[in-house]
Length: 169
Image (cartoon, rainbow, N blue to C red; front, side, top):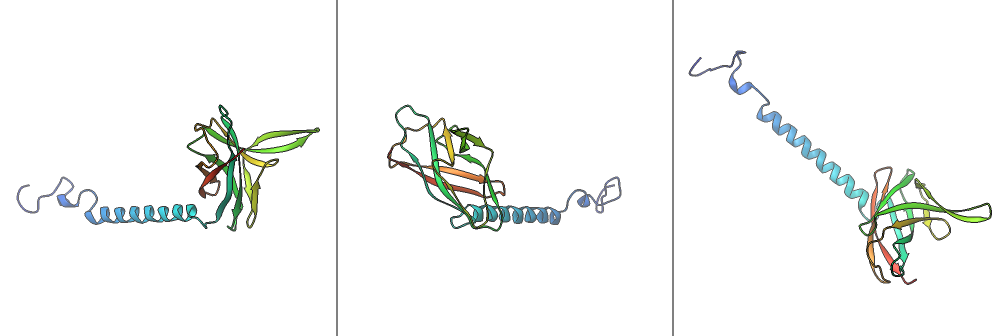
């Protein structure tokens, strides 16, 4: 066929093949709404004063050549659900593990654990002699007065980044 009213082999006008402009706009709009809501949820989880707060985070100054450090802090859960902490990372360390000191058979032992849970309304204290974070492969020669970022990720999707102070040894 030629001229006006030209059609494809199925007898439909050529302009009707494929998604219409309105359909494309609708998909683009829905994607934008989804992306915006996701960004808002992440921002709310990461903002200070959110469901999880971290206070008094510190490590002791490292002697020259030492590449391991223990980090201590207070983690407060103001949400209505338990918050299992299961992943921690920082740009200054190769990897970080959650550890717990236990007294077993007359000997104090340090053991890695998969997670530490902070229950609703609870403040979990990571301190010497109990739960703490072990930083391995510390890159920087950290000195008293320095600070670095540490990110805590919880199973519920909450992510908190905090500054860790380096205190004199």
